[in-house]
Length: 280
Ligand code: GUN
Figure 1: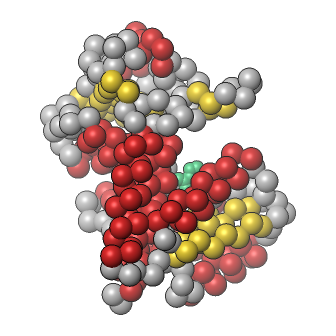
Figure 2: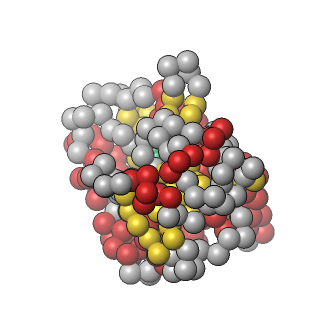
């Protein structure tokens, strides 16, 4: 039976560190969160970010824009936030309504304030291992892996999913720690067989219960990035928890695994951004 990795506890410890450093060094830090439209899941995430800011002593600025917002209006707001000295980090909650060009929006955010690390400048820096910020979800997954005491170096690591937000950067972070990394996706042949090689398996597919016990090696560390809402309203990961937890050595639950870590990393990135900007 696997040990359950407690994302809430690990994230609470990180947020406490951020809070203590801000208080100790009297750091002024501000995060602007922009939400466009009425997606209920996005609303929940944004509220959680606000609460975490309050806990850490980071000033939060929220901009809730209507569904029909134009590119021009959104870019104008980003320009204003880029120039605002009280704002150290800018996060535009994704996904955006379809009339808005996500890529152009991300590129407009100053790379110094890009606490999601989605801007191509920051993505490039991560690729060569010379970065200020790490993308929140993959960095959170790495913290959870570290919390198990398992050393990534030399391990077979399999990431299922190749999104720019999770899969690709996750693969890069595992590689930075000398894992042997395979990235799987919808065109991968013999997916179950590839997954069964993994000492560390990261599921970022976006399909409920996608990873079953037959895809998991005995004793693997299993990190579940999925947050899927079932028809009965319950949250469920990409991993079939009940059967996979019989085989894994460590496993993250959903909720309470990777989710809280994303926000903890965001707090850490906002503090980093503030320190860099306050030193300029
Ligand atoms: N939507 C889902 N996850 C994220 C995230 O990490 N950052 C942003 N900006 N939007 C998201």
